[in-house]
Length: 451
Image (tube, rainbow, N blue to C red; front, side):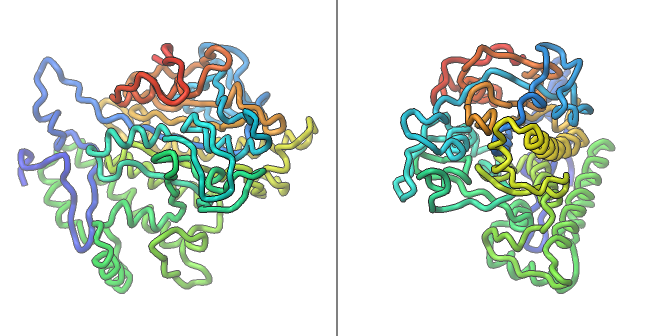
């Protein structure tokens, strides 16, 4: 297989398997056509949104001064090795997360408006209404470029109905991504289901048949594609050969961990076609990191360029024994200025940030072009609430990680004007993705000093 026969859309095919390739200079058509006077070929820019619930302990989150990140706040100090790759931004407001006459329900609104900028209709019935989220706005315009327009991921299941927050449907509390005003995007929480979706060939019957064969023979998905991989490697340069080896190793590692995670009492559970809680690891951190590993693979293979990730649902009352917190997170967020409760909230915030640190580290390890996968990403981390006790939606805890292909100047703390619509950031991110967006939802302009 000569290099001029390879296309950017090449996949390794095997028995019931379709495996997308990482970004390789040897098979990038732009790289093959590049002239001497334009040697730099840029990989695609990816965009991800990471939601954490119940606000933040802001004194431990917010950097003390603007400009260069010379000193990190206590919570952000756990991203110290990524100091040059992060950009905390203060001053954003999510106005439509506020009551606006609708009374209680700030937790539900903090999710429903987080990526939409819209004020959700207060209902616990079927007449839900919100707005198009920024990820789906982008997906609708870039879907022709990747196998999956977007991925919606999380660690707690999406609800389809019910009353979860002062008369607001549980739909609002557990889904951050909206394709239309009335159509939300259910998130995937099952690592095995996500793996099969990313690396299956789309034919459910054939996948089921061949999954049975693989289980019987105790072979990895990759065993069926190694012949094609070896032929392809003969056509690659030394740098890409090493990338291919690293990539195949990482996929195999994830598959092994997924297989381990779905065993209970020594017995493998037959996984359904949709996410079920018993199909995920019982350990929250392992679950989180498995999902993040596969998000890295999805971005690395250009299977998608857009993703959302909810660490937990709005108002989550999960306890975090991993860090010595036995109280429920939501209960603690109503701290009434109790210092001990605030310290526990800070521990939970730190635990969440450490998971994000894991993701950034994995992305930084993937080399792309003249930089890394992280260099070519815009990953927004934050919450639609600031202080969980006050239920305020201004001066939100927002962080960008990654340089957006060179468009974002990181390694500093940026302060925008107070009560700047969060959707102003989305307009700028959309434009960085190459999407023409004069406005998005309640935006009033752009964030002009990201670069």
